[in-house]
Length: 472
Image (cartoon, rainbow, N blue to C red; front, side, top):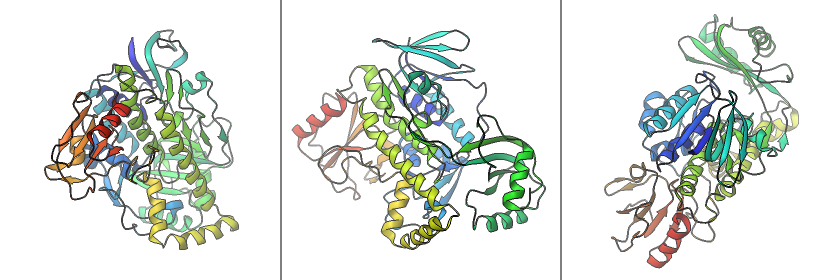
């Protein structure tokens, strides 16, 4: 019997598996595909996901494989300079193709001991008081204490659970593919620049080895978006949108996606949980999808591990839903808003012009940027200073820096009182670091394994109450 079965070996599932393994949880990842997908749906990471990778000691691997771009304002494709005062040590976008991200996360999950089985399609599940039975397409049955569906927007786990997935169906469709062109790169750039003055859902950019990643609006909706478009369909839509098909040929892969916007009513049903696109889908505006899923996993991993290991305080696992559901709802709101602002209709275009003016105010630019890069999130931990419930940015300490101390996935008490505080009784779950930082105006902070501030103060009795609240 496994402790946890994770359905889906995408970024969310792999990140979750690794987080569970940091706490000794016996985890199996199942994926129905025999090979990792070559489809490039995500083009990079935003600041909070970059921080997550830094907190687990993975960032150098990603930086070596990606390219950093300055973090300017880009809400709804409205280009603005970087807003001053962004609360992060990583004020950039890391351009890195999703298959590369998948590969690094797979290597990390394997290094910490996660087991992966490919070609295993989940077709049934049932749960009781002791665990979950997972049925595979070949008839094999597996048992686990918990099951997490990280199996994408068409999640089988969500469907088998019968969880409602309310929202709006797709009204538009977009074609996506990676292929070679005969057109001169300068011509491609010139055409794209001109077309994107009015059609922001179009794009063509090089991805290496002479290939381009092309995005172009489709001609209406199809009944089954799992069926890829043909190259002829791509050529036709390129002619309609750009006036040329660029001589596209030799596609590596072709895909299509819609603009449906949906969010499950609950992230947990007994011993089965949902994360990533299995829990929420939205248009890819602002490039938030992969980031949102990885951050779901980062929130859930230590909580589910605490439950499996028997020390989770009451309500900890349910806080996964109460914390992450509102975050997803906010992402759905901002992608809906961006979609409206990117419309070519006169009304939305008027609002877009007004928004363009408003984003000249640093506060507006910063507010919208922080929404997309997810550093403005504050979980509701009750009354307290503004930092309570927020993740703490990486700060420089007298001896090193904060995120270097978080690679093990444990809680952390950063004690600037000179050692007057103690985590005795919780030292198997919480590290005690006595150090100081000129960037932190607080006597001491208690950080959860996901880096969010659970307590601020200097009273030992109050600290003990909060250690009990979060760490059992």
